[in-house]
Image (cartoon, rainbow, N blue to C red; front, side):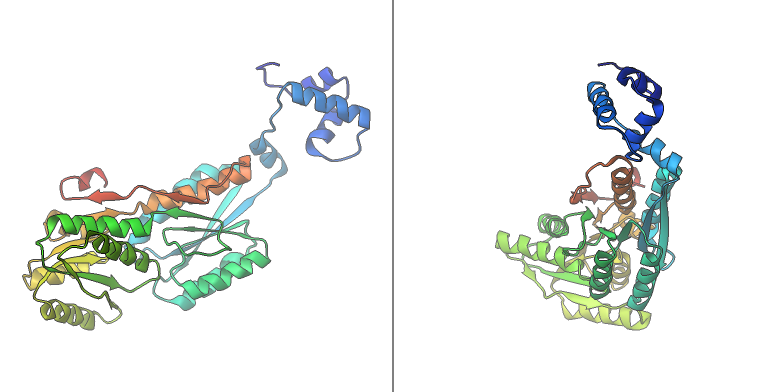
Amino acid sequence: MTQKKMTIKDIAKLAGVSKGTVDRVLHKRGKVSKEALEKVEKILKEIEYQPNPIARNLKENKVYRISILIPDYEIDIFWKPAHEGIKEAEKEFGPFGVLVEKFIYNPFQKEDFHQKSIEAISVSPNLLLIIPLFEKEFFLISKTCKKKNIKVALFNNHIKSKNAESYVGQDLVQSGKIAADLIYKTSKSKCDIGIVHINLEPHLLLKEKGFKNYFTEKNSSFRILESINFEMNNPTKFVNDITKYLKEHPKLGALFITNSHVHEVAEIVSKINKDCAIVGYDLIPENVTYLKKGKINFLIHQRPKEQAYLSISYYAEYFLFGKKVPISNLLPIDIITSENVDYYL
């Protein structure tokens, strides 16, 4: 009907009722006669009235709470960009009543994850956003959230759960296939290929699955060794175990490291002077250094900052505007080399 921004006073004048009547209709409070209700609703339909949820939230001092269960980046630096993404989203949506609170846990201690998850839901958030490094503990807390009517969303680590409403991250199986393709196209035929997990987490098995599926489909001459996991809680044993593994497989021509600890392996490979292609994950400083030195051939960038920011912004816009939250948002899988890495930093 008109492009003019209509006020309550304008609507009241067009409908022939008082401003108080329009206010009660818009906010669904107080008694309104059937005749007055029909008049106001007729005008609202004609002018295609859209309420301003932000203005309403500010007026009513309404707050939406988002609790985020996230690893400590001072323990594992991979998570630092995710913390930066949270900070950006908090700065953008905080003024409109979206309160973001981080509950930081030790990524190597499931007991700490469990304790922080209890603290995260104790503030009665509208949403619990989780990076679920510990599967069993995640299922326990997600069931509690369902009982308390708290929404649950995941980012970075994908775990199938009927209690989680959305996921932001990469297609981890496809990520593993891309790693396999890089090795297939750059390694010598008939060599052995190793799959190495460091501090194995459930989602890393999805990368392994994609990696193995690629070579099964190719029916190639490469021999894929059984995957192996190394724990970092004892540094001396960690170095000795990997060194032993490398020496026990003289035909090893390529390694797929399924997480950001790829530099740990690259350092050992370099020290024993083994000729071995290496593909791993993430743009942490140590990995970038080894990539530029040619000790790591490729890195796959998982965009943790973007994952965190999008996860919060989707729900902030859902709470403020009623926008639909995508069930799954799979981000691009970026292949990083020594030649293009500076563009991503």
